[in-house]
Image (cartoon, rainbow, N blue to C red; front, top):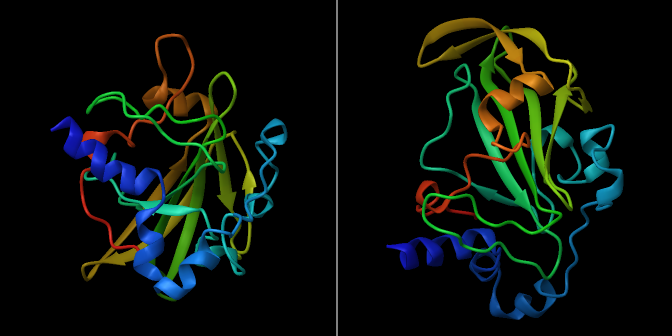
Length: 218
């Protein structure tokens, strides 16, 4: 079973298999020479704005990832007030995540960034998509750090904010109109779920047993 998990997650986390499935053989030589345009300066992270990382192409709220930023989707996800999620991962060039066991977090290399966007569809009054926040987990030299970016009302930018806040959301889901006062967590609240024994924080979702599924990239 461990080998099965390792094979599937290697395809996802090591970021190779989707390349050939999206391009023809003639395009492959061009792909492998590409360099991810993500702005990587670990000492300066977290940046003031989400756009500073250059994770996404052109219009930021379309969440269209640049080269090297790949989607992943867990089998199960923590419940957060009915919010939908789009998850991505980015790692520096020429590194890899190592398998530990089925139920433990991968041993991610320094510089890994996990990107989790929380959003609602059919938001009233105009049936639009609204992104509430984008949470990052960044693997520094000694530990993971948490960074939260709160989107503005115009949906063109998200700003670093660990203070915590509330925002009203009304949306239609399965024909039913719902509303809530969404809680954007503070840094201390993040520790409630992600704290480890030594006082640091770690991601909790990207473990082999929670990622053993097929995901269509293209």
